[in-house]
Length: 223
Ligand code: AMP
Image (cartoon, rainbow, N blue to C red; front, side, top):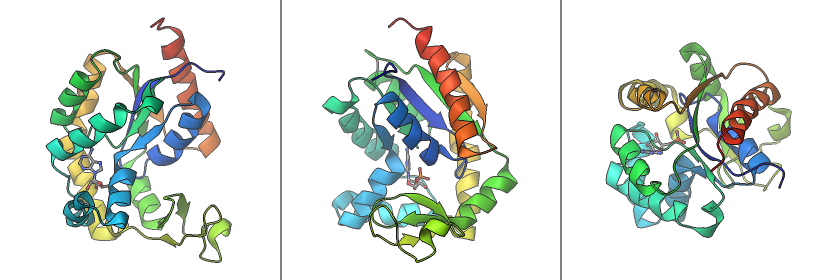
């Protein structure tokens, strides 16, 4: 393991590339990628109580109640593989969740919050074109050669359009982001944890930008 672990939150509008970048970064830093959206979608697929409660809320693009999300994330961060660090993607999404996260991580606090900055018009285009494997959650775009045969090359599942990536839900989710989640940016800026990174460009370019800010933060922090 070349890089030290990191405790990081990745933020940005839906479609900014958080999932893709968090997956790569998690591999680069050997820490788990913890996506609350992926955890909820897995619960829906498995038909658990949580999945049954969350499905309609998610399809409408609304937020699952804070107490539910805080419970899920608290348990996940307690697992052994989260000892070296983690990348949280999709959490926190409200001030209440951010306050709870600060309590949960009081002994080993967040190192950095990366905001991926992508303009609204671009994320609407990206979300409309997004296809997500219904089995492993890998993200593709509608024209990708890799899924021309309608099969996920990683697991044999089927890339589909998420219900919440349909046009009505996209606009609503972006409004929810502005209203409930964007205030967290100011909160983390005031704690000097926020790094805003340009999310436009190739996947490799954005990855390199994020690694540069993470390396600078973690290297300058002896803890
Ligand atoms: P995502 O894949 O992060 O866009 O999440 C998909 C959906 O899952 C969201 O639109 C919400 O309905 C729900 N969700 C994911 N994370 C959270 C969270 N931290 N708080 C509330 N709802 C969430």
